[in-house]
Length: 211
Figure (spheres, rainbow, N blue to C red):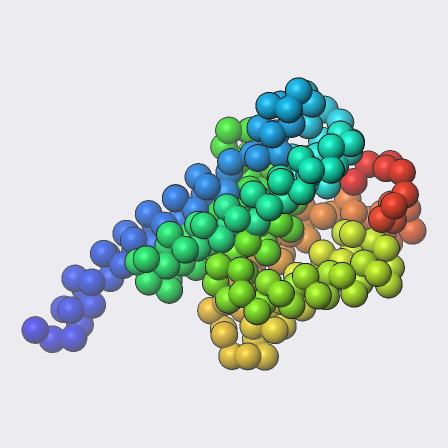
C-alpha cells in the first residue's frame, strides 16, 4: 500500500483521537471548582463577590485561605489530568487535551461560558506537557511578584516567558500551543492590563478594588 494511502487511513483516526481528547479536556477544564467548593462550604456564590471570578484569587476574598488553596490545586490538576489522559493517545492528543482544558476553564458551558482567567490551569497544562516549564513559570511569577507586588503582571510576564522557553529549547509545537494560551490569558486579563497602564492595579496585600 502506498504511503499516501496509509496516511489517508490513519489521519482520520488520529484526528478523531485528538477531537476526543479535546472534548475530554474541555469537560475537565470546565469544572468550576471555585464555585463548587465555596457553595459546599457555605460561602455562597463566589461570582457575587469581588471580581466575580471563579478562580482561587477570588475564592480567597471569602476569607477562607484553605479553600482558596484547594481551588488553586484543583484548577492546576484538572489541566494536568487532561493532558495525561490525552497523552495515552499520543503527543498531538495531549496537546489537544491541554488546549481543551484551558478553554474549558475560561469558557465553561455550565456557566454561560464565563469562567476564570486561566493562570492555574495554564500551569497545570504546562506541568502535564513538560514539567520544567511549569517550574519556570512559577519561578518567574515569584520573581515578578516579589519585585512589583502585582499578581496580574506576574502572570502576564510568566506566561510570555513560558512561550519563549519552549521556543528557545526547540519545542515548537508546545511554543505554538502556549502562544495561543498566552494570548487568551492576556485577553482575560484585559481589565488588569488597563489598570496596570493607569497605575490603578491592586498590589498583593492591598485591599481589593476589583480584579
